[in-house]
Image 1 (spheres, rainbow, N blue to C red):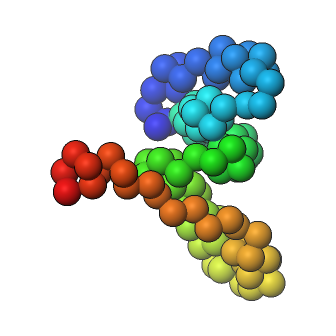
Image 2 (cartoon, one colour):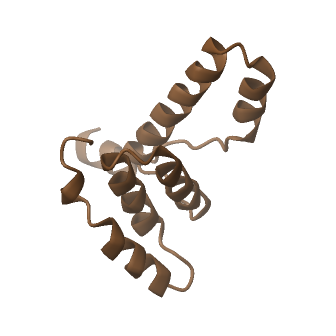
Image 3 (cartoon, rainbow, N blue to C red):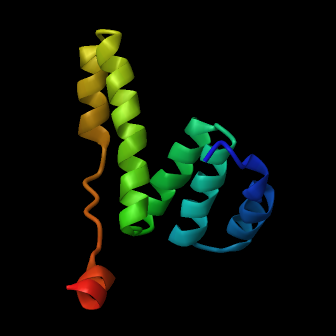
Length: 107
């Protein structure tokens, strides 16, 4: 994602998200993608948390979210911060990918 940071119009997506009353899971997802392309992991995490709260469960969203969680958990474990690691894992929502299209199209 970091190889094309300018291909993610984060400012425009943020303006669209701000204009929407409830916030769209799709917009939040792509705000996270744009943030990751720019190397802004905290902003990506925040956007993807909002996407999860809005009900996003696309397989690629779940995968991206899990990659960030693995990286954070690994860093905490390597630093020996076990209480922080347990707290991180306890606060994460369980997000299962929706595979409707996959089963319908390929199953």
